[in-house]
Image 1 (tube, rainbow, N blue to C red):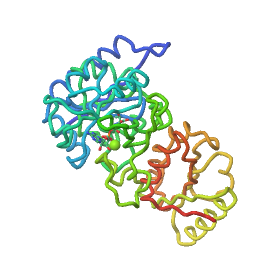
Image 2: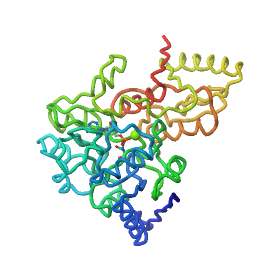
Image 3: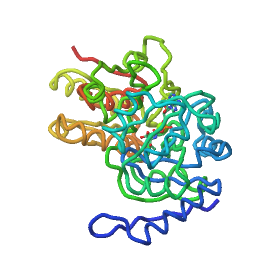
Image 4: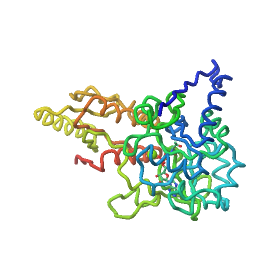
Length: 357
Ligand code: TXA
Ligand code: MG
């Protein structure tokens, strides 16, 4: 299959041109006809198909090479559209929607009959997200209102934050890719299960537990299985059990005070070089000059969580592109949005972490 690349041109003020809208409408027609289209969102690029058509969902799993027990998120573009796909809307869900939608928050709710089991991986619940990105919303509208979309990467690769990575993974597998530039946040949405009281975070993201707690007036926590992966507890979001986001090179996180981290990584780099291995580091701007690695990638200024999140996946992919065999990353503070960054980084590292004492 030839994959069409649709470039979003935009007017000077950032709004979509008439031609952009025409092109997005055409892409919406492809989804209506049962095809798949990748598109930008404020988090990561999504791989969209008609969420209410089980054949489209099957195609999504096939294109990604994803296990079919890993459910898809249904994207909507208007609050009123939610009624058709969910059984009931708890008060907490309403409050969270009022505050955070449209935006990078996904809610798990009881599903209605109309949502096929193929979309929800056999579950009686459905994940619903109302993205803020204008291109995403226009596409969802033109597609009939309900777009199932996982991240648009091949299973096991980092989620794509730019169209070039989608092209790398999905060319020849889907009808079209809409190139809307770099995604703003760079990490997937926060997932919160509102079928339980108090609601529980199944995947950390830009919307933090503290933000959710302050809106709901009760303590919101993250699924224990995510915080303590060695506990052996099964994660409540089926997708969180898979080893995601893995670069081909072996990634190790090194944690501790600056001086110890720099020394430890320095020694590891030396040994790797002696063994003829190509090395890479992922570090803050302030420390980058201290590392003698073949590839040095800067995550941003120390403590700039937004920048680190924004760059994380493209840095991981670039190590692959440059054939790096051993990668070392400084660790990040786990406060606030940092919880999401460390969650993804730990998964990418298969939880390999050295703690310098
Ligand atoms: O930011 C995002 O959420 C992106 C963009 C494209 O919107 N999408 C995304 O989808 O990250 P995906 O498929 O890569 O991740 C969906 C996660 C998986 O871990 C899946 O197991 C979980 O959501 N999930 C989906 N439906 C669920 C349900 N009913 N109950 C529990 N977890 C669910
Ligand atoms: Mg994904």
